Amino acid sequence: VQLQASGGGLVQAGDSLRLSCAGSGHTFRNYVRGWFRQAPGKEREFVAAINWSGSSTAYADSVKGRFTVSRDNTRNTVYLQLSNLKPEDTGVYYCGFTPNSLRDGLGRTRYEYDGWGRGTLVTVSS
Image (cartoon, rainbow, N blue to C red; front, top):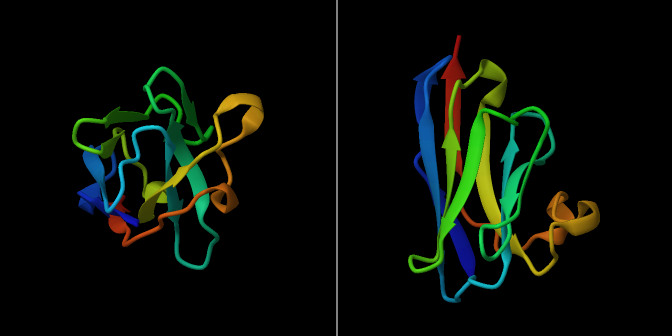
């Protein structure tokens, strides 16, 4: 059971990208889905997450107002719209799922998530 991220690429600062995360081998309808990223030499960090219905979302402070997470349960897919990209957004973006909710600060650490598959590389040039 894995989630595969796609949609990355090489862009310039200020550009936009839309990442997709498709699930296979399982329906993830009832799970929180999260996006994380890992820059070279750094640990994997939380970016955004969305609950099963899409009614609740969470974002890292560094991406608030610029990134938007959404999901389509009919397609078993979660999306991350990246806007006004900055060089510090560069990294490999991964997606995962967790049975935790987003309440009380949950759903924001990588240790809560499973289903890590191949990530997608986003490179933002200045």
